[in-house]
Amino acid sequence: MSTLDKVVEILAEAKDLKADKITEASTWEELGLDSLDTVELVMNMEDAFGISLEMTEDMKSVGDVVKAIEAAK
Amino acid sequence: MSFTILGTGSALPGHIVTNEDLSCMVDTSDEWIRSRTGINQRRVCSGESLTDLAYQAALLALEDSCCGADELDLIICATVSADYVMPSLACVLQARLGAHCPAFDVNAACTGFLYGLDIAAGYFARNPQQKILLVGADAMSRLVDWQERSTCVLFGDGAGAVVLGLGNDLLAIQLSAQGDIEPLYVPNSWGNSPFHQTKESQQKPYLVMDGQEVFRFAVTSMVQTVEQVLHRAGVSKEEIAYLLPHQANIRIIDAAVNRLKLPREKCLTNIALRGNTSAACVAVLLDEQNRVGRFQKGDLLVLTAFGGGLTTGACILRWNK
Ligand SMILES: CC(C)(COP(=O)(O)OP(=O)(O)OC[C@H]1O[C@@H](n2cnc3c(N)ncnc32)[C@H](O)[C@@H]1OP(=O)(O)O)[C@@H](O)C(=O)NCCC(=O)NCCS
Image 1 (cartoon, rainbow over the protein chains, first blue to last red):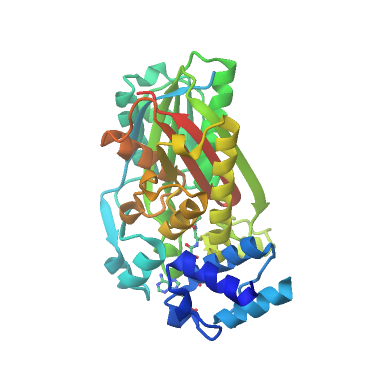
Image 2: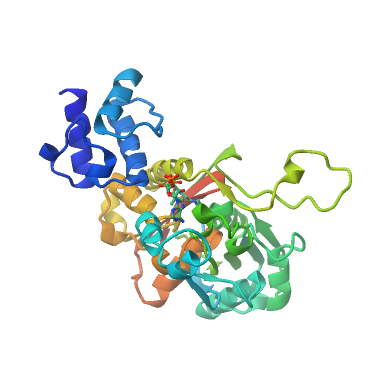
């Protein structure tokens, strides 16, 4: 499974979203996630990928998180 | 031998501060506060001192325990906002109650009540035949900056108390501390010494918090400590009747309960009406639920808290009233 697919799967499950509505370009705002949702999301990603991630201001979309995970692996 | 809970009590200030009230004071909204924290209103001291609240809570707990103040062997107060730096809140309370036993305060911030339970367990190990009054009380309204919207909306004031006596109903308890100032601190007053020249002595005595760091710590530590005490007590999640978590943010509670894979109905909350009352949180929740008859004899309760320190704690108690 690609990193993107896995991120989408985790996101869909955690926040009860439809996976087919989430793309690499989806932003938190479009998905209706607030700042605490994104904190939780980063925690979920850390657990799922066994990495340590820093949530930064310029991580605004699914693609940004995928990139950060790839870099942290 | 550990102890059993003989009775509970709690007290809150009369003045209610709603989210609407706060939006007249700082740039915030009911919508923001509700959705980010689950808090609708909180009680804040106006005419009451913290001693008044602790005293009321203690009286109710003694009454619920059929115990007189003169029967107490020890008074422990968990607090970070006592009316005096000295004497301790516990000593001031001892005088008001007319008790004659030793009395002292514990500072473990929001985890203070759990730290108090562990200390009490130590006293019971030495002498099972005694009665201990443990009070968690805080007036965070004195420590937050009422011009700082990111913190003043989170807290409320209150006191909760338990009387502990002969029994064996503490199945497991686990404390932790990860000493670190930055995520959450309140500088003390430095008085008016003309000699102080440090950076710290210039700080305002208000609460400072890195919200997202505390959020992450809170969720992770709550899951960890609860799993640890379950493991230690050899109790499965299914055997737990109720979880009584520290009431700091409903989003923290929901995230942790999700990760623990506990049914949400087992998790008790009062944050919507109380906010975060620091060391009082878990004790107030325990008393409110006791008084509505929530608990059956034999129920296993998990209490858990986290706070400045950073500290955490969790325990498993058998309800035996
Ligand atoms: C405090 C907490 C609710 C803040 O939520 P958050 O999502 O981290 O919020 P942020 O600090 O990122 O702020 C998000 C935005 O809301 C704003 N904001 C903060 N407080 C606000 C308020 N009361 N009303 C409206 N907006 C507010 C911020 O200024 C920020 O705006 P910006 O993006 O334009 O800069 C959350 O971090 C939390 O609960 N942490 C744990 C705290 C805790 O448990 N403490 C007690 C431990 S015992």
